[in-house]
Image (cartoon, rainbow, N blue to C red; front, side):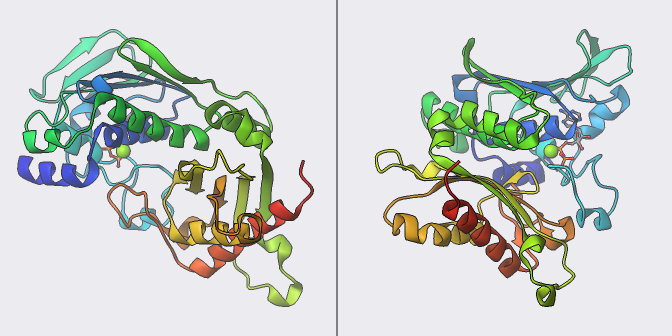
Length: 338
Ligand code: ADP
Ligand code: MG
């Protein structure tokens, strides 16, 4: 089982940033409003992710480390409508097989907190407020071949920050802080705006910079609003919102293309192609567009269980999504700039 876990780990964990992504997913699934990362040596020596979410009751702590243990779906039907970031129950087991791991947690409404040592399985009481901290030390210590492939600490740190950035752009309502070697390197405060669009704009400012917001237009589109009566197909609408940027030549960077489907960061050819084609007349294919686009679609019209890291999705009808994204960006770019 150790071997199977290590093989699974190879699919899920490529580098420290993969661990960061999984642990932040878990914190968000637990309802955290503040997530704090502490890293040493680009995450290779330590990744600690602390949240103020619902926590894990003592009796369930050892279960969380078991392969295919997930508290998030009860049966296959639930996969059709999965609303959490995680559901495969693989991440913690996989990480535990390739690093020294400890979970400290206090469940909401419980009087005490417990620490589970991933190696020995030992459970002991500790002091902490409600929430969970997962500590991952010496990643790949037992698989030196993999450890050799890691880049410099600075590069691994950059990847870790990028992983958190992706989450931060999806959740303006959650605060994030990243510490490296005892120094605060990034901090994005929870945005208190009651209006979701204002909150998103503020978060985009904080994470991508004022330039991104000032050189972009708002995207806000709903497929059903654009259909003529004879086009009504009875399908639930696809919503697309966010901001589409008009980069100036000096600043265009391909790493400023963020696409989300139902709150999940994705790399998706359908969305990329649709956005790019909307930009055709503006950029003439010579520069990279920059954007943060959020697609909301009925969960049963998208399969998120395509890839272990869930970064790829498969749409039931990719034309429907392509059209929505294309129209959404077209409309935004054609509108007078505001
Ligand atoms: P998955 O997220 O797919 O369910 P994981 O291996 O990532 O699988 O986590 C296993 C289980 O551990 C989760 O289903 C959840 O019950 C629990 N868990 C992990 N991290 C946290 C956290 N930060 N707060 C609360 N529960 C957690
Ligand atoms: Mg998970």
